[in-house]
Length: 546
Figure 1: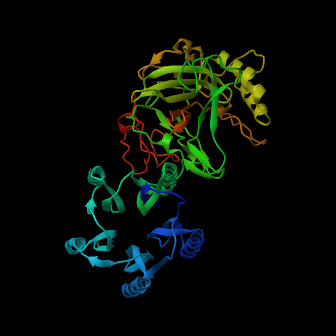
Figure 2: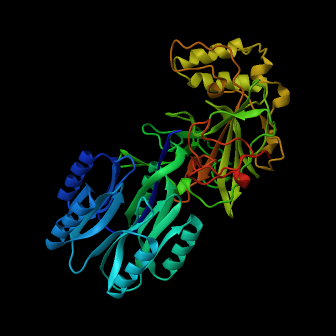
């Protein structure tokens, strides 16, 4: 397994531009720094990662700036003395494998820094400097567990901690925040946090355990709220690289429109009025496209504090999970597919208590049911969308010919017509539907369920292969030939209403957003994996039977 890089980052109020990069080699980083310098930006954070690449953050600034990397202790001390005499002060430092990295900016007054101190000696030194009117501006834990720190003139309170686990650290930060202190430096080693707090005001946010895509999503969100990235710290994660950074499609988009009805609305159910023919409700991929090019995860849709409410939408233990957020790397699905190895149908249950707001034929996905779910005191907070269901052979064949076929282009139309004919439902009849493809009248959906409240203990439909999106019988390649296989399965979307814009966005109830297979735990297994970077929406924190 190749594990990916995880990020710890902190944001504080700020104005103007901000840029940051990560994973850049020395020459590219040096060139980028020069570009930003000429644009009036200055380094505020510099890190060398375990693979030797660089991470940096730039804020607006003026005057000189110098930085070095890979220096020995003696060379670094000599360089620091030279810069000090030129009116520059050390503002960031890192020690890695005995080599020093540092950044200097204009400053005045005293400056002291130490390296290689054990905890007790460092604590004593900090107390001495504090009493002399100096305050920590940079604190680092070295490879061997010793400490490096930099002090500048300052006043007021100062606190620092090291070796705290996540929950203890979070509680300590909350305490200091309420006392008027804000984080000024932060890092994590082997799950243990080190940080410095100084007097401050206004908002503060920090996130731990993000992959690159997630931290950029948060950074975009916080930037729009008037916050700027203060510190970013990279460390080796424990999630396989193939499971990370796959919420956002790099090209294209995925917005699925389902027929609007008096009950099925973009807003609360039953508020549509009388929709016009062709009106749809859109369910969208969770992304923000910025300036037409940059793409960010839509964090307001992807993150929430609701207690898990979903269970598996079936009770048949022979059903297995196949496609998840991605079918495979680079092939987005935005849903979950469930099927049996023997391709048999199975009863479908609501994934959570809710109200049925749509039952109808979708031109691509066949028989579709949508259930609205309340959560956390919010009406219609989530929806589940069940596709490829069965609703009686005659009904389904008629819908296929009369609704779907006229809207298909080449080569899909001919392929789908061939499928319909070969499975016993030729155009105009007479129909002699093959049960393995079309089921029987016993599979019909009870249409009286529309507008009714349902629970996971109920059966509301049966899995099928209706619609060209469900049959596995069409392909955009003209030379494609259907092999005759049965593709009975349930395709289920989980969607959340984003309170930021009141639109619907797809979510992964596992909080993993990755291809299937090893990225996802087995049924009835607690989702404690580090790959679950986003909220887990399964009841009890695991995909369990109703």
